[in-house]
Amino acid sequence: MDKKKVILIVLLIGLGVCLGVAGAFLFPKKEELEEENPVDDPILHWNESMEVGVYEKAMASSFVSIEEGGVIEDYEIDTTQLGEHEEVLHYEDANGKKYKTTFKVTVKDLEEPLIGVGKTYTFIKGSSRGLDELIMCADNYDPDPLCEIQGEYDLNKLGSYDVVYYAKDSSGNEAREPFTLKVAEKYDTTTKSSISLDDAKSKYLSDNSEIGIDVSKWQGNIDWNKVKEAGVTFAFLRIGTQKGPNLDSTIDTYFKKNIENAKKAGVKVGVYYYTYAGTKEDAKAQADWVIEQLEGEELDLPIVFDWECYSYFNSFNISLYNLNEIADTFLQEVKSKGYRPMVYASKNYLQKVWKYLDYPTWLAHYTEKTDYEGNYQYWQFTDTGRVPGIDGDVDIDIYYR
Image (cartoon, rainbow, N blue to C red; front, side, top):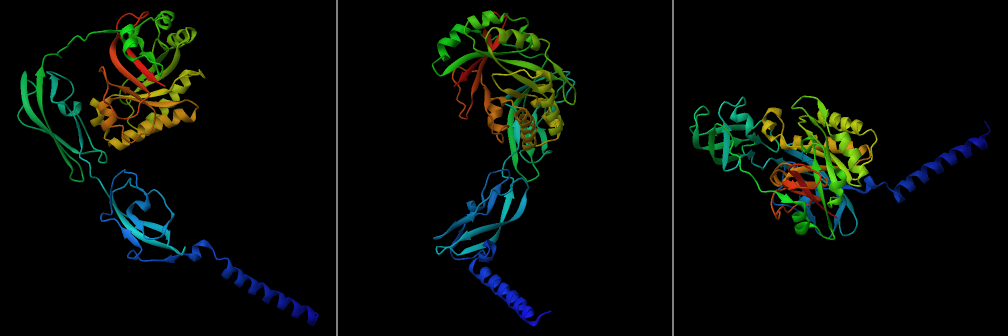
């Protein structure tokens, strides 16, 4: 090779190396600007407590304040598992110099178990299911907390017994609920007074609300034209129900007739599905079943997840968080198919059970004026409504625009 060419190649290689070094010096990568700083950096002021409750939302920046500086890359830490977690914080000082530091956060279960019993509980003598099955005992994290009834009682002897329901989870959180256990031959039934649609309209109808109903096969044949003429503008129709835990879904025998005739009458419709889902796999399959039954039918209102089998909860061996994951699976599947999702529950369960969900809510609270403080779009305020076109009682609902 020509000597001059060799010299030229060497010079070009040398120039390239010099330019590379200069470029790296003048234009360093972001990670090369960062220096590893200790947790005790004087510009960092860490929280007195480096603990967070399980499932609580917490950002990395939640545990520190930075003196004359700021966080560069913030993120939500994983609080779904108990124990000590190592986190990384990227931050800069007042001069813009960038650092990163590692720190540890401890995730703890700080919540006591939930016992689903009020001041009194009636047990029917000779019931095929035991008392320990029927009364809900649940924990936010532990799928199998210790649950027991303390005190003397006899389920084969009629009478009243003052007892205590005791629960303890794997983190040592305890709950005690004193209650009166009544062993009876049958349930006491108190006839509730009915409320007419006109009364409901006079109390709750405004420029910002609408009156509606929710129905199933129990309402029988409905004259939807009369329902519409009476002032009902929307209805939730039961599309079907799971027959029981681990059983198949079955369509409501009046659903097809109801959706066809309600739409013809000009009533806006949505649907709800009554479920006993105990796993996420069940929930997804049920959501797909609902979509299949709709056969492409357009809905004006959401598809509603209706889980009310609290007396079966103990048999599912799941935590409250697991139950919320089950609901989320159903609702996300509905959403992915182009329908709007919504969750239905009573006031007490919305407050204590469905607290990890972020979906539109249909509140059930049978009272003249609800004191539920959460957000809700629909309010089912009675199950003894009387509406023209329907024989017998029916649920009446209010929609808030």
